[in-house]
Image (cartoon, one colour):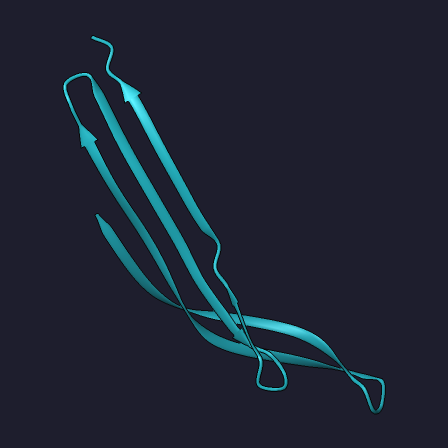
Length: 83
């Protein structure tokens, strides 16, 4: 199975203005995607499940820079059926 969810990320940061030594609050809204995927096998005695999840986040920084943060999670489950 696979899934893909769109979303909106909101970030607030405090940046220092170099010329006057004043702090400014900068906020940004950026799109994000969340994906959860899995694959599995179920036999008579053994089963295997593989799970993969990724969360694609991004935000615009100053001076035309862009930060992309993508935490990922991978799980592999091996099992034996006890009758």
